[in-house]
Image (cartoon, rainbow, N blue to C red; front, side, top):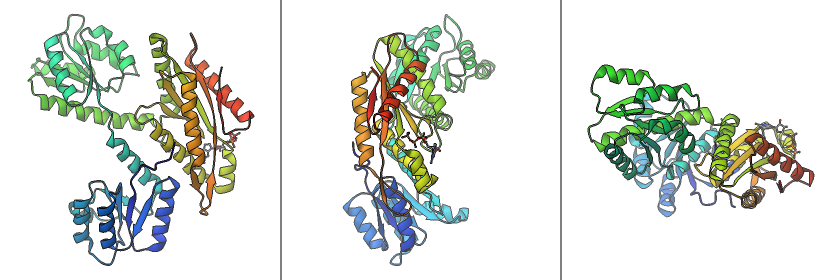
Amino acid sequence: MSFDVSVAPIYLLCRNAAYVETIVGQLSMYGLRATAFARAAALLAAIHGEAPLVVLVDEAACDDMALPQLLPMIARLHEGPLVYLSLPMAAQEQIELARAGVTDFLPKPFDGHRLIDQIDRMLEARSPQPARVLIVDDSETLAHWASNVLTMAGMRVRSVKNPLKVPQLIALEKPELILLDMYMPECTGDELARVLRQNPAFDGIPIVFLSSETQRGRQLTARRMGGDDFLVKNNDPDELIDIVAMMVDRYRRLRELMSRDSLTRLLNHTHLIERLLQEVARAHETIHPLSFAMIDIDHFKSVNDRYGHAVGDRVIKSLARQLRQAFPGADLVGRYGGEEFSIIFPNTSLLRAAQQVDELRLGFGEFRHLCSNGEPLALSFSAGVAQLGNGMQAEQLIETADAALYQAKAAGRNQVGLAR
Ligand SMILES: Nc1nc2c(ncn2[C@@H]2O[C@H](COP(=O)(O)OP(=O)(O)OP(=O)(O)O)[C@@H](O)[C@H]2O)c(=O)[nH]1
C-alpha cells in the first residue's frame, strides 16, 4: 500500500526561495508532492501540463504578472482550490482577492497541519458519502414519494411505517436525518421526537417533520419537542432535497467537531468505543464476523526524544492520513490514545483483517518521514488483531487485540500479532 502517490501535485507560486523551501519541505513530510514556481508563465504552463490538486499563491508571488491579472487566469484553468498565503489583511482586500478567484486564505506563518487538513477535506469531498435518511411515515404513498425523491438525489433512504421501531433502526442504520410524519396510529411524531431526544446517543440527529399539519401552534409544539424543522407536505422535491442536504451537511460538521481527535481527525477514543459497541451489537445480531485491530508505533518515545515533539506529532498525523486513505469515509478508524490507533473491521474475518493491517504496516514502513534537519526517518508499527467470539463484549475484544499487540511487540516489533 503506497502513500498518497495517486494524489496530484501542489503548485506553489512564490519568489522567496527560503519560504519556498519551508513550504515544500513541510508538505513533503506528509507525502505530498509540491512544485514551486517563481514565474507566473511557468506556473500557467505547468497547470496546462498536469492538473494540480491545489494552487498556492504567496503574497510575494512573482515579477512577471500582477495578481489581479494572474489570479483569474489561474481560476479559469484550475478547478480546484486556489489558496492565497499572506499575513493578516483587511477584509476589503480579501473580498477583492476572492472576486479574482481565490477560494481559500491561509495565514502566515505557514502551518502545514492546516493546509494538510484542508487538502484531506478536499480529497474526502471528492467521494462524498451519500446522506443516510430514515423516513418514518405510516402512509406508504408519501413515504414512497419522499424516498424516491431523496434516492434520486443520491441519498441512502430507509423507510419505516411503525414509529416504535425507530430507536432500534437508528442504532442499526445510523441515519443522519429523520424525516418524521406527525400523525401515525402508534404515536404522534412529536411524541417520538421527545423520546428520541431523551437518549444522548440520538440527541444530535436532525429531525424534520414532514406533515400536512398547517396549524402554526401544532408545528411549534412539534419543534419544541425536538424537531429541527417543519416541512408542510407540498410535493416540492427541490425543497425537500435542499433542506435534507443542508441539515445533513450541518450535522456532519457538528459531529466531526464532537467526534474527532483534533490532531488526526480520526474518531476520538469515546466515539471509537461507541462505534465499536454498535458494531459488536450488530455482529452478534447478524452473526457476521467482526475484527478489531490495535496499532502502536514502534519506539515512538525515541522519535520524540531525538527529533522533538513536533516531529512526533507529524508522524502521528502521517499514519493517521494513511489510515484514513485506506478506510475512507466509513468512520472505522480511531485514535485510541497517544500513538495508538484502532481499526474496526465489520464483516471481516481475523485473517482478512490481519492481511489488511499488514499491508498498512508495509506502506508505513516504506514511507520516509522528514525530520526537522531534513533527514529521512523510517519507522514501523506493531499491531494486534482479534476477532469477536461468541458472546464476547467490546471490552474483551479490545483486551484480546491489545494482548496480541503486546505479543507482536515482544516478538520484535514491526509485525502483526493474531489473537487465536
Ligand atoms: N509527539 C507526541 N508524542 C506522544 C503523543 N501521545 C503520546 N506520545 C508519546 O508517545 C510515547 C509512547 O511511548 P511508549 O508507549 O513508552 O513506547 P514506545 O517508545 O512507543 O515503544 P514501544 O511501544 O515499546 O515500541 C511517549 O513518549 C508519549 O509521550 C502525541 O500526541 N504527540
